[in-house]
Length: 264
Length: 264
DNA sequence: CGACCCCTTGAATTAGATCAAATAAAGTGG
DNA sequence: CCACTTTATTTGATCTAATTCAAGGGGTCG
Image (cartoon, rainbow over all chains, first blue to last red):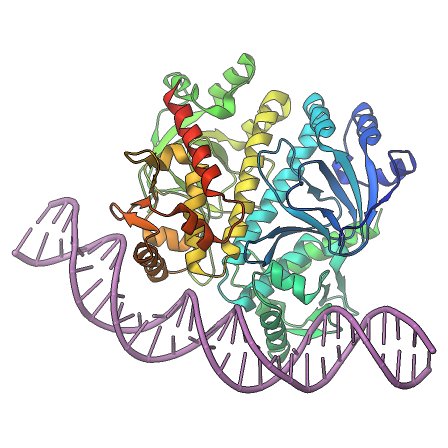
């Protein structure tokens, strides 16, 4: 199901969009200009293959809008999702050695792509850009390690609880709102059950059972298939078994991040 | 079991050792000098806690000798190993945001530590160093993603097979030799079964059973508890279920890397 | 030689995968 | 807007693999 992307070509209406890309904050005007010249803005419909496994080395770029799946097709036919990338995340691999994954659009996505060689050259020539890339890669490393901890959870329920927590903390702007009394999180899961199963290394059936278990235990209340209100955050944290999360801190942090977007 | 490290102090006998650190290859003499001034060479005995979870932000550095465990203590008392670091790998997190893991010596280790703030400043001021750090972090990111794929394997046997393959490819110099006829790999596992269990998100018992299963099936032949001769590499790859590995390519690659170390 | 540590083996239990089917949404075309 | 097709989710029953609990080797080191 590989479809042709909608190309905008490397031109200046993009400049307006690129303004909002945090990777570029703090770059020198000259670097920025060069980067914009190299940029290629594209959109893909949900389900489209952006890069197939095997030719993942031609492009790098960043997500502007929507959710991008990084996945690996295993020899038994299973597909494991390695990461979900949301706006401001980078994809691809500069200075690649191996690293071969497929990229698919989990929702309709808008991407800003750069031809890899050109981008690498730009990175090597512009320390300010290299610094920005380093920060971005460090973010990804944190996310990947966080994911290792998540997958290490032996129970599906623990992995699911962890997923909800990570989702809330990492991407509150995209997927979290606060309900009326401003004290309960309402989370929207950006992918369907099948994806979630591939992401949490389990099956749709097990996902479904865990979700229903959470509902029965009064941890969450579904608004619809994709969005849940968290009734008992502390309980969810206990199921996740991850000390890193603290209900009071988490809520504070999320409120702060949500507030930050309303201001500017 | 936190023990005091053997300090060498920030002085020049280290310079000799730092020569061999690949992170530093290609650095300008000035950068290198500054870095050496900041370096603090330490050794820790096997089992020692290098950094406890909670104060993981003071140092960064790299492994000179031995194996370092990066681990997370979970609230149920389990400890999950996130990564194994071997010579040339960096630990710690420059420009840290969160990222909080414990570091323990899996074997006797020799580390080259840098006070984090100072190192970060150095990185910001010296693009050549920043470039080197970027390459290192990219390596770690690859390793972490590889690990995500490994942990996604539902069967313990698959995870174990994958571990052996990753170990061989990633650190052939430290853990692989070729036997007499130069056609079979002999792998030495750098950690005991307990660690391996924590690494593969399972139990010692399950590890043991999988190992014995491999022996019965003629995939491997144990030389002792820690080292195995791979009798059927192709079979092992099939169990791992990871298309990324190809027996012919893998052997070639490993031979090449082993040859590379004998030359210079 | 005995104490200790690590690894292996065995039996019972449990969580999740698998197979099969029902129900619920979401589109589609009249 | 409704009947009809398609896709997503839930539920149930069975089977399998792994954890758990318990005990038995096999080294090594004092």
